[in-house]
Length: 354
Image 1: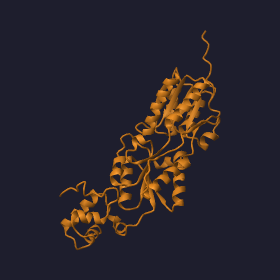
Image 2 (image 1 turned 90 degrees about the vertical axis):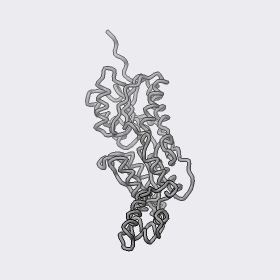
Image 3 (image 1 turned 30 degrees about the vertical axis):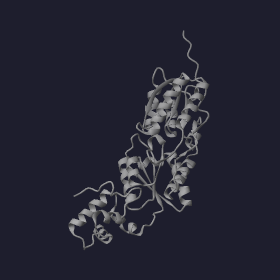
Image 4 (image 1 turned 135 degrees about the horizontal axis):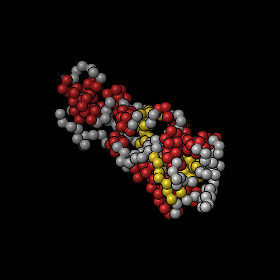
């Protein structure tokens, strides 16, 4: 059978029964009967209707909503991570809280699904949009050359990307300046007298990880600091601890380490104490994203602080504006700012040579 041409695909909106009827050349009643298994449609026409519905992203059980044209008053968020980890990540709990706060005030709900990977996440967005379960979407964990970006652009789904504009394509970004946060941290450590700084980073391939990698190397060079190898992890405490041991059990270990999240920083503190290093006497630690977790350990950890709840709220407000038809160039949130605490101090003096 013939493929649906680009000119026939609905642009900038979700597909409807009327779109299918126009492409196939039948009535809307025939399309509805075919999609709902009702009689009165030939098998050949039924097959063609099903084929066109799949090609343009229309899902069969969306028929009732499509005929009514009603809004769902919901937005979708698919998170690609193990479900058991979600409750241990203060960042996402705060982010979702900020999103929910704005949505509830606007009588919108949040459709949240935890998926195994970005491909499953994209399937969820396609299904929600085709079934008219959502009016817009929020995209997180932006990857380099992220296949979700052009796919959601093609669907015409109003989408806000929580990520840097360099990777958001034609979708609307909400972001903060991670490079500025890296610079403030390294300038602070250099002022304390540190010369060799390590970093325990997040997943490779993520846009924000790559931006932090580049900024870390660039600023270290500008300040004359020696950058220890950057160790990439999966953001868990287990991997954060393993990366810390790798950095500390070397002859030229760093005197300060910057961690890409709070969980890994706390794990790193435990490793330092486990091998007999004093924090901050022998090692200074800085955590990305302040949280109660880094404040209750001893010593309390120096951290990069930002209002994550407000970050989520900005994303939700921007998305609601898009859904209502307003244009938006995106929103740059305040960059994380350093909050010094007891985990950072001047490095130990070099041992005297005999």
